[in-house]
Length: 238
Ligand code: C5P
Image (cartoon, rainbow, N blue to C red; front, side):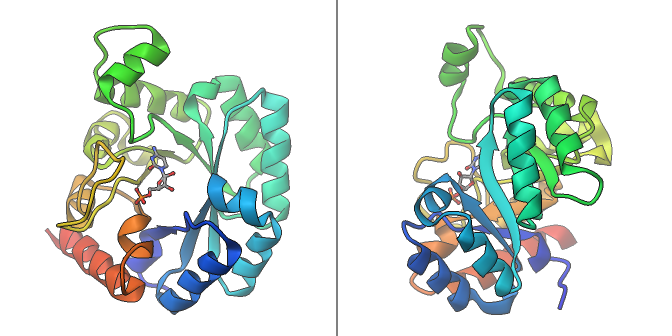
């Protein structure tokens, strides 16, 4: 059954083994429709895990953040499309030719290719160090990288909750914004330096939220998922 709120909550399965991941998926049941498989789990469990998740009726967000020459990224996107992946990430910093190659490889019926702008763990000093420019406004940098995604015809970007509004202001609804860095009130931010509650992310206009440790690290993951959904829904109504 589709649910307009729960279908926009992506659970990040950043767990060490296939068994741990499937345990969480089973504990969450039908409420969690979209699951994110990232570098940790994919490297450990391999692509066959994607088939198992599909068997359980899940839509897969493959978050391997491809960043390579266009030909290599296109091949990786085609492989993901053959596995029936629903959504995948590439780094906007890979450049326009790479982003276009990814979109073309996905084709009209393949996965939605979304571009990672700046990782939510980065602070201004990191960005200065990496790109060699100062001073850097993180928001300006994210909006600039999002325009690369628009030029390449991609349907979405990944950005922190605080960057959703500026992206929507510049690019309107052309881009769906996927926002990690989500924490329930009272949760440990851990390594996220730009984070928000689901409610605030919804208020800012986030199309999808990605929630990892707040759900997978909770004593009762299903209850935590429910709390995320309630918070997201109340932000939508605001
Ligand atoms: O546990 P937590 O909720 O912080 O997990 C966030 C997830 O979103 C992780 O899988 C992380 O790799 C991912 N992510 C992120 N920042 C980005 C892109 C993806 O945190 N810019």
